[in-house]
Amino acid sequence: MYKQEVIFKDLGHIPYKQAWDYQEQLLQQAVQSKIQQAKGMETILQPHHLLLCEHPPVYTLGKSGHLENILISEADMAAQGIEFFKTNRGGDITFHGPEQVVGYPILDLEKFYTDIGRYLRELEEVIILTMGEYGLKGERSSGETGVWIDPGVKGSERKICAMGVRCSRWVTMHGFALNVNTNLGYFDNIIPCGIANKRVTSLQQELGCNVDIVEVKEKICRNFEQVFNTRLLYGYMT
Image (tube, rainbow, N blue to C red):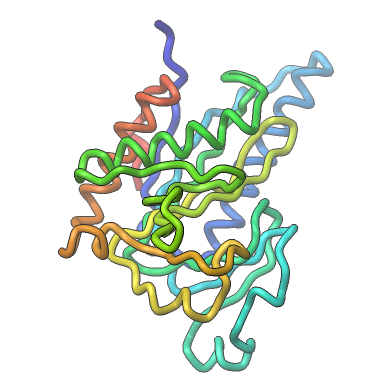
């Protein structure tokens, strides 16, 4: 069976805005190529990308998010060395920081399927499979995106992976954030994803030990290839 090829890059530790700008650049290149192709013009077809990285501490608010879900002032954020950005992704407030794997797939969904709901479910499946390799049962929570543990057990629900995406002419950007050895104290300053009375967790918290983040990235890549029926081009790794 034919597999879509996806250029993989591990951006390492990178400021949020720098990674956002890079995503926008890749998305616009893909969109402009599609516009030219639709007009019958000669163009260079743009490849798919999967970017993985870690960010310095930063809160990001989705376009449908609510400022009241931020429980800390911008002055206090600055004092603690935390950045803040209003973004153009879906979803509400979330945190990114060290020891958290953030994934940004830049995919032309017209070459896969034109269904955002299916795309989100398949991103969740990548994380669910990855968690399963650590003996953890990741699940979906009805009406909520992301991956959870015990979503149906009242009082025990805890989110381990947040998701929020943007799509332009079926080209995606933004993506997921899986807590690995993340300092969960940062989540105390927000109502994560705008969902009150539910906790946030990490692989470290659930397993009771530090987890090799490089190993987690490798598992995510392998499961991404499986779920999306793709082949990652690791030769482009930076």
